[in-house]
Amino acid sequence: MTATKVLPLEGILVLDFSQFLAGPVAALRLADLGARVIKIERPGVGDIGRTLAFAGRTIDGDTVSFHAMNRNKESVTADLKSASDLAYVKQLVARADVIIQNFRPGVMERIGLDYEAVRELNPTIVYASATGYGTEGPWRDRPGQDLLAQSISGLPWLNGSRDDGPVPVGLSIADHLLSCHLAQGVTALLVRRFRTGEGGLVESSLLESALDLQFELLSTRLNDDSIRVQRGGAHSAHAFLAAPYGTYPTSDGYLALAMNPIPVLGRLLELPELEQLTDPQEAWDRQEEIEAVLAERFATGTTQSWLDILDAADVWCAPVLTLDELLDSEGFAAIRMTQQVERGGVRISTTRGPIRIDGEVLTHPKAAPLLGDDDERVRAEFPPEPESAEDPS
Image 1 (cartoon, helix red, strand yellow):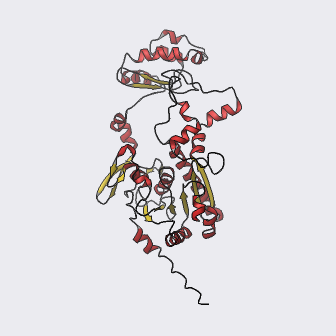
Image 2 (cartoon, rainbow, N blue to C red; image 1 turned 120 degrees about the horizontal axis):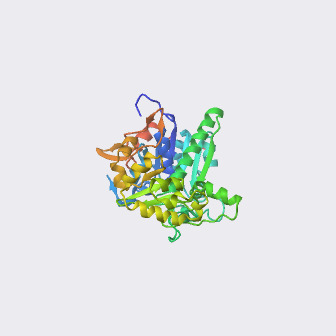
Image 3 (spheres, one colour; image 1 turned 180 degrees about the horizontal axis):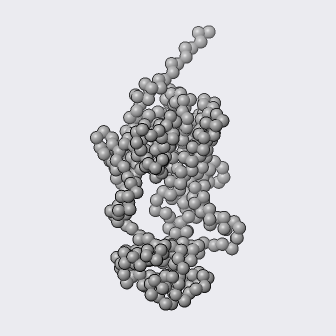
């Protein structure tokens, strides 16, 4: 974004006590919108994400994933078990607008930085708390990790075919969704604070995020207890959508088809046996048969040859791109989803924030900080208050 533009959250100070993914990415989303984010990290160790490497890859001593999640932030080290460090952190808390934390339930209470304690220090604070499974119930103390939360939510049983076991989503989807919910809650409470002067507490969890993702399924099941997850055949992409919804091999790749009338596909693909299927119920009753006919036909041509035919008829379809094909595509270049950040002369390519403000993409050149990178500067800006003299009496 151009330097002349004022970003929506400029002037907001965020203290990020979180690690791993959901909390740091929530803070990143706020940073992309202009907030100043200071990570509070353990001396000598820091956020465990610095060493928990996605694909085992590191750049300049930190994992690539850490760089992606923590760009455009500052780092201050503090041992929250140290009385002096904790006292200093509380001074920062008193001046902050937002706190983000994702410790297990009870940890911040023991430290003395839970919402109620923080509100005593800073009555207008906006406090965001992320957990694995909420603060109540039998799962509250289970480890909050994406795969584990996906599994408890039932999500892996929605992927793959009936011949597969559970198939989790191959990315940290619960973490990413949780980061969105936290950032949304924080911005909503900031709006309320600007209107009324009142701060507040926003809470969400990996489990709630994974359940929210399934709102169609859960809402349908809650109103009709006959609903069951029944995954389809090898080409089906959705347990609750009829043929032709799925992916099909071509002679050189794969093609995806969304919701489309079967007779129209039959005419375009010269498949008379499909042209005559005019009853929509047959898309359910003969789902695997229809998918098999389509798969056999698509295998006779290239992905592009079928796209030429289907796109011309406004059929809902798309190529199934590999990672390399995506990165080499004109469409990926056109959406400008990447940016360059820099740390100590090392340039790192990463993604940008996915939203646009006033028609402009949000990019920032500042890379993720080194551990404790901003200790001296932040302490100079916010000097520790002198300890009060003891009462001589």
